[in-house]
Length: 455
Image 1 (cartoon, helix red, strand yellow):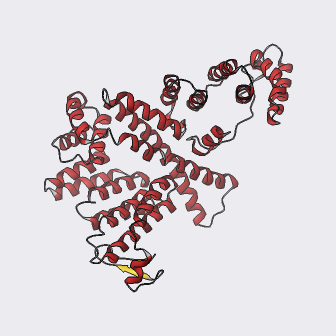
Image 2 (tube, helix red, strand yellow):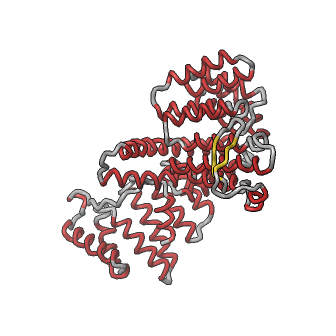
Image 3 (cartoon, one colour):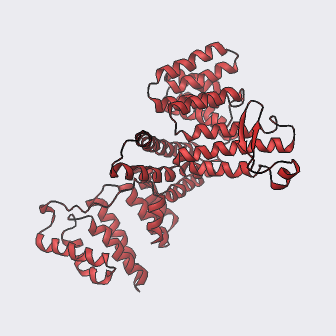
């Protein structure tokens, strides 16, 4: 039961119901009427929790008409798991569980990534070896990492990291990037659907019951998918350091200098890990913009030009990048990329671009999180007293709360930020000593220029 609840809440599948669709008549075997009758009888027995009573009818169907219905495998697992939990011959029951998983993949291969993922959990719960579990996780990953549960993705990535961090760190980075490419692609699709439906609702248009369900399901799945990156980052952190990245990319550069995918990933990782001071970074960016003169590449190239003091030329490339993109969703990402480049140089400009991104995509939680980080990093420079400095963290927490409110996909990151900022907010004693009252409005000056409530 715990495994099923975990998969339901944290699974990366879109929330769908099991379709009770039987195969065509020629799939019912040599005795189609008996097959149909047994399918109905064992399914009703399983629904009633009568696993022992369902066994004979299920086993006949399993042996004689294995292509007839997905329920043969869904219900069959419940029957076999009950035998394993309550029976005396656990070895035989365990063997049957594995056979059911394997046979399902032959006759009903749809959603095979999730099947392999569930099989890995089952093996782990039955005390199988790490290698046996990893083998199934690897099979699931190769099929579709976004159909794995978050728990299994984390387990797989941790195992890949442990096995390769010293001998083949590139495999660790590639695995991480493959996961996030798939997850981010699915999150973008869900967010676009959610944005359209939310806009329709805000305009006073009536939503169908199907659309209301889609809003609910998309929000659930975005919250689940949004947990993937923070969890994987915890494992990647010890491997993706500048000391590892720079020699690795230097060594691999000549072999990959015409590969846009490799260059893009190398640039983005060097940038995110703040390894941009090394001479390798501009070399990677220039190679990328040469091989793939895309909007994303232009943004990073503009950053290099600014570092060289070529601000006018940098602005040209930023404008070229924005002009290239007509899709509001993708344009918002470009604008946030520009905002990120300014975060250390000019916080006000960075915020301006973050708000431009929000204009293109109002539900872009990451834009609010960037503004929150800009505020928090200004605490010491935007206040003279301890109270004034700590109130800046309140403004940061408010922005992080906005991020969470508009974007379910970044709820995990937002909650972490909110907690961190509020830990620095003024406490009751400090508020009292300042002669202030909780709930009163307070104006934060400096470049931030916003009004917040005293906590």
